[in-house]
Every structure is written in structure tokens, then in C-alpha cells.
Length: 288
Image 1 (spheres, rainbow, N blue to C red):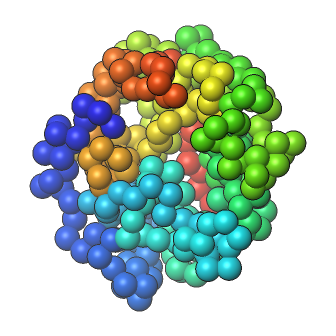
Image 2: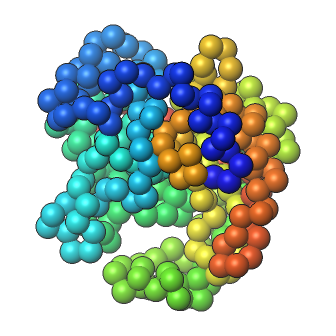
């Protein structure tokens, strides 16, 4: 993201762990996963250990797909060597849930796809419209935006106009069908000015997603996501940064200040202002 990379690179450089996950073979990853689970009985500590090991992992947009037999997207169904913001979140949750690699990969598919059915049409493509709601229903996350933001919390109602699926978004109509695409959805958010004042209240292990204003030319309202974590008593935003080109920690308040002035970013040639942040707590595994 613009304006973050030079600061975040310096912040993370000394903290990137030796033997980070992007350097591991499948066998080494299986061993590391077992060790994380043995060393960290508490789920929050385990999630921190997993996401910390991802630091320094190179960024690549959309690195996961439906595998070699996929109709549209033949990228692998798991890839810890390259991540984007969402696949970093998804794989971190799956690895924190399970200490056996095969079980974690199976769980990853249930996070990414409705009922774990691997198909482009069942993937949780859209963060606000599908991913957050479906994974809350599945027991992976719980929305805590209002718990943290209190009375300041707002709700954005997004009605997706048909023209949002035109031009560069036309592929969604071809692959999924207009009748199956999001038509309207709500997402709660804490206004960015308020979020800056209460950043210390955000629990470690929370997924933070930016919430941007409604533009009729795009079907989405979230453009980036990652984890709030605590490092040496200070909150950081741990995320796969497209600008920084790898997974990094950015001081949380610095990231929120960036969001406050990020109207410079463009969507379809227009400024796309950040309204605030949505918060979803990652849940520990329980009875299914």
C-alpha cells in the first residue's frame, strides 16, 4: 500500500525469523506445524506464532486456486511460499487450527469454499459480501466491530448495481453467473478517526479489514485485510503488503493514520476513500 513500504520494511527487517515458512519444504512445514502446536497450547499464542513465521514471505496476488484440475484457476490449493493479504489470513487460521499438515490443508478449503467444496463458484471471493459472513457462520471468526467501537460503530449498506459487473469485472458474470453474484450486503465499521483513538482496545488476533466508501462501479467495499497482533507491548498490523512485497508488521497507529489519508488511492479512476475498519476475532477450534 502506498506510503507504508519504506517504514514497514525497516520495522520488520530485524524481526523476520530464520527459517520462515516460505523457505520450508512440505516435510519441514509439517514439522514446524507440529512444533507450533506443541509449544503453544493457547490458541492466541499459536496464531501469533504462525503469523510471525510468515513474516518475510513474498507477496504474490491471488496465489491459490482450485488446483491442476480447476476449470478457471489452476493455482495450487495451498501455498505458504507466496501469499496475498487474504491467503495469508486464510492459511494462518488453518495452520493455527490444526497441528497436522493434511488436516490444516483440508480445513483451509472449508475456510475458502462453501462446505469445503473446491470450485470457483463456491469460493468466498468477496471479503465483505461472502468471506466474513460465511466464515462467521462456519465458526472460524466472530465480528467484534461493535464490541470494540461501541456506539460509534456504523453500518455500510452496499447495493451492487449491475454496472459494477461490467468491463474489468465481467469475468465474474461469465464464471459464476450474474444471478449468483452479490446483490446487496451490510458491513459494520468503526469510523477511522474513532479507530485511531481506540486502537489499543483492539484484541490481538483480530482480523482488521479496511472499509471503503460505496462506489457504483465496484462490487466490493474491502480492499485489504490482515491481523492485529501485539509485539513487545505495542499493537501492530501484520499483513501481506502488495507495496512492501512481503508479509510485514506495521505499527497499528501508523497504518490507521495512513488509511485516514488514503483518499489518494483510485478505483476506476476515482478517489476511493476509507470510511473505517471492520474487526473479526479469529476463534479457537471447537466442536463442529
